[in-house]
Image: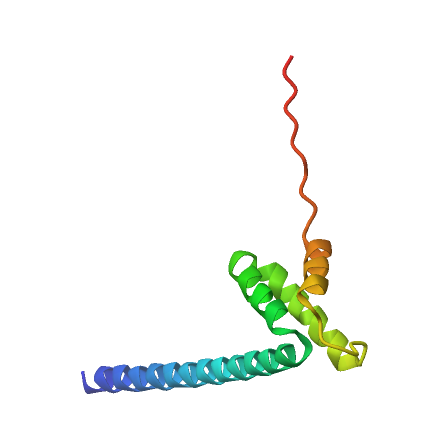
Length: 111
């Protein structure tokens, strides 16, 4: 009986240690994600005019994938040195318009 109890206790301790390691790893990943997000915001703050930044945040609410793709493109352009001045709202509108997936027109033909 004592051996069984000891095995159960060891197994429980192993599971608790594993759970603690997984929790620590999750916390590290969340912190890394938070740092990346802060860096992205800082870069966008420097390359976008306030109106454009506001528009991009509104687009992010409605179309998160599209906004993320545009943000990544803008950051890549800024880091490669291809952006010389801040992006205005009008320019961002054009970028978003071009990035939007083409909608397929559905036509119903009745016979």
